Structure formats: C-alpha cells, structure tokens
Length: 381
Image (cartoon, rainbow, N blue to C red; front, side, top):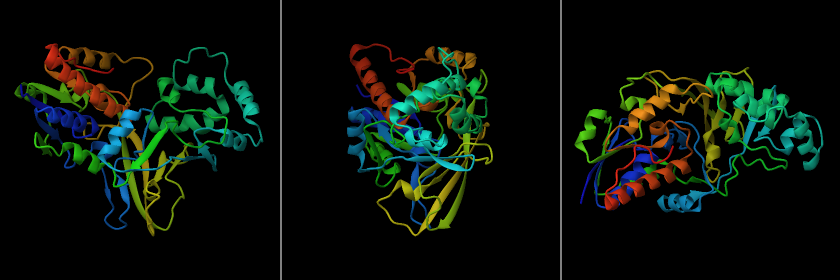
C-alpha cells in the first residue's frame, strides 16, 4: 500500500523521515517555508572569501552513537574537527568546558587533578541535595566563584532570564574535567562535513518519491490531504497559537569580514555583561583543512523571539510549563500526525539525537502499517 505522506520542514528531522519513507515506496511531499533546505544547519560559501558559513550559528557534529556516525558518514565525507571553546571573563581568556587548566588559571594555582577535585568539592555548595534550577546546579557542581565568572551573566544574556528560573538540565550537559582536556564534547565521534551540511540534506531529499516544495508553509488544514503528516515546525504554530505562544529565544548575527585571523579560534564565549553578544564564531576555523587569507566572523546576540522571528531555543522554565502541557495534550488528540524535531516536540536536541529520533519515528510508522496500530503523536518526549 502506497501512502501519501506530508512532511513539514526540510531540516534533519524532515529530510531523514522523507528519505526513509520514500525508500519504502511511499509518496512524500516536503514543505519548507524557507527558500533553502537544511533548516538552521544551512551552510554555504561566502561569495567574497569562499569560507564555508554556518548561517544560523555553529553546528559541530558529535555523537556517542556508532550507528548515527555511520549514517552521517554515508551522506558525505566528515573531516576531523574538535571544538575547543575559549571564554572571556573579566578580561581574561580561559578554556571551556571548565578543566584543570581553567581551574588553575582562575585560582592562580598549580593543583594536581586530585587536589583540584577536592578544591572544587570544597567550593561547591554541599547543602544543595537536589538542584531545582540552573543556578543551584551550578552552585552544587562548581561553587559560587566559577558560577559567577562563567555562567551567570552568560546565561542571562543567552536566555533573558535569571538562572534560578531555568531547569538544571541545561547545565548538566556541560562537564567539569580534572585534567587538561579542552575538547568541548565528550563524544567519541566528532567531525565536520567537508562541504557543509546543506549537501547532506540535499542528498536525503534527492529521491524520485520526494516532492520538495521550497517557500511553502504547511498548515493544519492541509493534514487531511495526506494519509499521515510529520510536523517539525513549532508545536504551537500548528494549532495557530490558540493557547498562546510558547516562549522561544531567537538569535541575531552581526557579520564582519576582516583580513587574516581575527581571534585564532572557532568559538569564543563572552561570559560577563560588558558585551551584549554571547559569543563570536570565526568560521574559517571550522574548516582547518582549508586556507583563507581573509576571515568572516559572526557576533551572536540572543533575544526573545517575536511572531516574525525564527525560533531557535525552546525556553522550558523550571517552574510553570502548563501551556506546553496543554499543547501536548492537544497534539495527542490529533489524528494521522506525528510531531518531531526540536520545534515539534519543544525540546533542545543536538543533531545526532534529531537524526536518531527521526529514524525511530520512521521505523515506528512503518511498523504500524504492518501491525495496523495507531501512530502516536510523539515518538520521543
């Protein structure tokens, strides 16, 4: 039985699902409101410098899942890349995530790993048993001094809210190391596609059973035209914001072109409030196998998303999420639609998790055709 499948969004979620279902013989139409594929992973070369640009912020592929690494490497060549983030705090440059070098530099010390571990344990607030928010998680992990220097003001700039109003899970993603490892990620598989992310998505969508509609937005009224829909747009947008708008942060990028090397590193965070931007990314450092005489940087500013903005980061607060819960319940009442991806499930997702969940959603859908069960509105939550 060949089904008509509608997919909202041509980022990784939509493209992976489209490819899997097209290979299974179904007719798939992908609706993408932008004029290009790849969503916020969209990349292209700068016309003047020929530097590969990440138009919507840096994207470094990393995963601890071997099957996802195998999947991405079949789409295109992945080059070795290690993200070594630097951070400016109070006029000094440090390494992130916090590691032994950071600790020794910040406290003007020369501690061994064991000494530093004990020192940070003494700095930490041991009275906090179960952190209820970002601030408490930081105080329990690293103590007040490091929290103030590297996280408090950066978090306020990034999220527009007090760290006490944000969930502890945001900080749990960041490690503290008691060695000199300055690799930002712990995952064994890390890299960067040699020609950016756009060709990877284009390859997924290059199938005779896929009809790509760029500059075309999917709306709820179109759901009945298809046997099933996978929606990776904003969850609240599908329901025309009938319960209100879920909060998102958006980003503004200020592009500058310079001669030579601007900052000597791909990403530098600005952790205090003496600058309005959160970080500067210098994009030629994402492709260290290339040589460029000029350089392109992007200064990144975070603010609350309005109705006309591109939503980037769902804001899940540590307290009241009643609107989100009501939208989820509304979504579960719908027929023949599954909500996927960062926006569709209103969660922060890295690229590897996005791909993994899209593959899972595709397989669940194909399995339901055999078992004649009902496809759930959410396959991961």
